[in-house]
Image 1: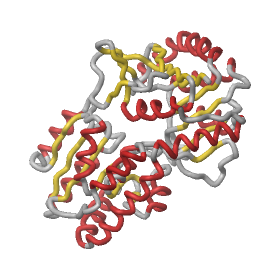
Image 2: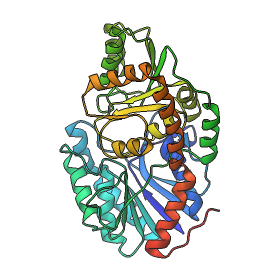
Image 3: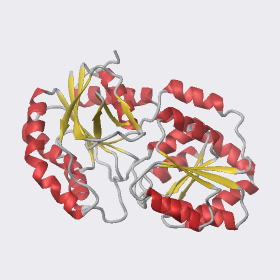
Image 4: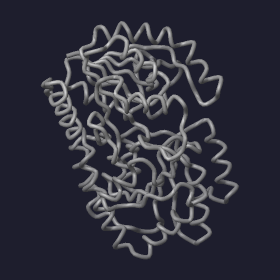
Length: 385
């Protein structure tokens, strides 16, 4: 069976190698094991790939490049219009050759893919992964709202997998965990942190884009407040973004130069060392589905402190670890961290709970869920080769 994947994941063709965002590559490497062939249609960018990128390792995967469009500025978003004809032409060709379709939303190219599927993939098994916030409390972009409406109404006549469980969830919308690592990696991580304790200086961690959307400004404010309270800590910031230098300057202005280290992107193996040593991961993000960095950190016994958005409160409550904190409540982060230092047994218990809960996010569990999805919905038996 030939699976066509359409996504907005930036790809880089550099020195004869195709690479992309590491967590997506790892997930698709695993997903390809269920199919005879996996074709990934996505934007191709020029230049050196970021440090978070990986090359595909599964030989069943082939890449179909299209020109990128979109961005944060209004004129960047308008650039999508100019690319739609070329995107549709590429999608039409690949849809006709595919046996099943997998669209990864939300994104501008994903909205075009939903329209292409509606035109040319009627009757073909179609699975859409909505990776963003399925139930946002604040108004999001028009394209995101259109995609959720399209999927709720089931215009694609398929299934949608989402993060979290929702009271008005129709039958075709299915709760899925966002896979993050193999069971072997989880077992290894678990073994490395059996004796992990809360100690000073506290080891704080941020992983993600260094911008306001992911909350790096709030993280620095939390660090400043902890410093003013006399808490001994060190904060590692892993990630990058156009405004990274601005935040490095801000850290120095807040007298945090000795307590905060900006490290840029790290590959998955390098990240594990930081997860192993961290006590808390801070992610005061504005919008998420379920961030893989939380489950990755939890597998190493890190206690997560993140925004109460989308599925994050559901999963942390079920796991009995960490805190899901209202957006913008800096004081709640500070109080939570100080509270753990005053009651380290609570941190110890929640650290162990993090490890146990992280097992749900293994690729093995993901592949079983995908196989069950295809068998139940379309009576198609998939097997791991």
